[in-house]
Image 1 (cartoon, rainbow, N blue to C red):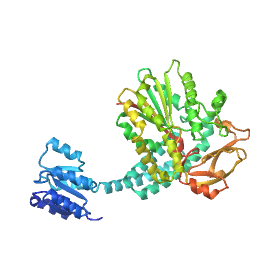
Image 2: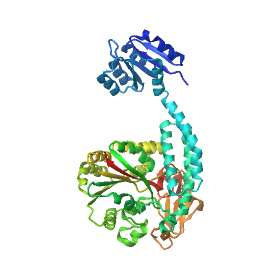
Image 3: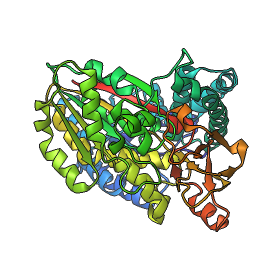
Image 4: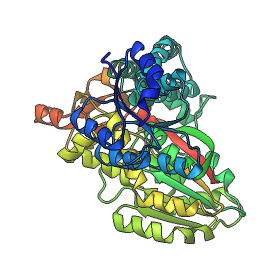
Amino acid sequence: MDTIKILWADDEIDLLKPQLLFLEQKGYEVITVTNGYDALDECRENKEIDIIFLDESMPGLSGLETLNKLKDSFPLIPVVMITKNEAENIMDEAIGSQIADYLIKPVNPNQILLSLKKIIDNKRLFQSKTSSDYQQEFRQIFTQINSGLDFTEWTDVYKKLIAWEIKLDAAQNVDMADILSSQKSEANQEFAKFVSNQYESWVNGSNKQIPVMSNTVMRTKIFPHVKDTVPTVVVLLDNLRFDQWKMIEPIISELFRIEEEDTFYSILPTSTQYSRNAIFAGMMPLEIEKAFPQMWKNDIDEGGKNMFEEALLLESIKKSFRKEVKTEYIKVTNVAVAKTLQDNVLNYLNNNLTVIVYNFIDMLSHARTEMEVLKELAGDETAYRSLTKSWFLHSPLWAALQKLAEREVQVFFLTDHGTIRVKNPSKVIGDKETTSNLRYKVGRNLQYERKDVYEIRDPKKVGLPSPNISSSFIFAKPDLFFVYPNNYNHFMNYYRNTFQHGGISLEEVICPVIRAVSR
């Protein structure tokens, strides 16, 4: 490891010889100056200074004045303020200027060493500890993945994998992140087998162990909490993966108390047309088609496929509540509507239940496929999570939630499905009416690699309508995307490493549903 270089500025530097000798014996290099001006000059001339120890009460340019100039010119160098004065206003000003630490004179060598360890060695120690902890848990997760898990246990494994992804992101440990990525891919392969084996029994009710799914999430996780005394706001963020939720959770937790963090399983296909209609109707797509034929459109039909969400939601509320529930539905699909939401959000507190569908993340996912600049900004899962957090912090949605937090309110956060970064193409052949989605296909006479898909020859068995008598569905297993033989290489390269949905993966199927209340 390179020698750590310390710049120590103190007008009584001669009195600090024992501390300086101690640091040199520990392998640190110490450069000393006696005033703020020399400290600034030394930083300009020596680009390898790692940390600055700065006396607060120097003559001439004071410690605080020196600190402000250092932060203006060298904002990335951590500064430890050393002071005889414990006056609150001085410490407030120093901390407000973003000091890394402060010590009270007389300082002893162990105090100095502890501060250095905390600031300089913190990243290295964090990386080492994180890597060590993951290596210890690697074997446990490996054993779990291959031990015949049920749907609850799969959720636990997925949450563990996400927690490690985020920890390794913070530690910037590329080697361990690569190992985790391989383990997650293995988990996804086993999860796809699990869903393929269980899905039909979940839908037809022959399995006693059935997860909460899109068609039951509202009546099991949200409706029971709707009451007259406190308004309920439901925010459905289209395409929000569980790892993306974990990125915005700390922001939301500043103003809201998380009462319950839960999950549900998206129905297949994991796409907006199917999953979100099922959420609001409280029905599987086949049931919607039978009960409200005018409100259901198949993939091959003309027109928008999610035009009747509000009507389906109102019908579901009528069925679930014996009394009238004052409800409002808002769908945000552009900046103008988002701004209107921000301006008017307090008016929604006059309702018992307000449902907000926010489409930004879905638009981000699709735009990323089309726009080279977004491919650079969100090149992998780490960047995609970071971009989601940055968007949320500056969004009209967060501004609206901040207004809500000032009132007594409960807020639910959920999604309709997630996305997965696709990596490997799988050839498929279909007729001209075959759907264009990259992660699922519905059509007649489909030809495909059987090992790559979960196939449904009779859609009615899994609660799906059939556009034609002989229609069948296929769902892509993890990290695969369907490509037609025509222009195969072009489309393979175009869609590889883009985020898609519609198939079977942990990321697409296991969705967050969160209950929070204002603090």
